[in-house]
Length: 215
Image (cartoon, rainbow, N blue to C red):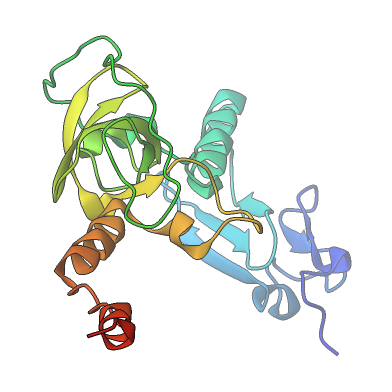
């Protein structure tokens, strides 16, 4: 099996004028060449990079200083490092939004499907706010309910208009909570509308009482 990385015995011997340690021929030798890629340096010399490792070799006289090496290594590390999430420095500037104190609305606790009202604490899903507020969940109080809900953001006291399908109930899912707890506000409103539109069932007891009454 051929080695995955360049074998140490085929590394260059600089003291002997860039020759292979094992082959005693001009470096890179045929064995080393299979593990290297090359590109020209700005000084005109050739730079060889190891395909499966961090090592590189600049043939000829050194045309850079130790400070240059540190700068290059820092740039390589920065390019390989994944960006922080959320990358706040990528966000556009926040547009002007109305600010106010916490609304004097008592907290409303949802006890069943469709029970959304002003005072409900919700999580604004990513994408519900302007991109200036980032691609993260934000805790907010619903101050007006509708297809577009008015919410008060606890982060900075700003007031926003958010689509009902971008709002989730306060708190994460738990085993002992019913399925409707994970509904969006839009789903709660749709459930409420369906209950209002459904006709009331006709009473079945009235006819029984009439039949049992004496004539």
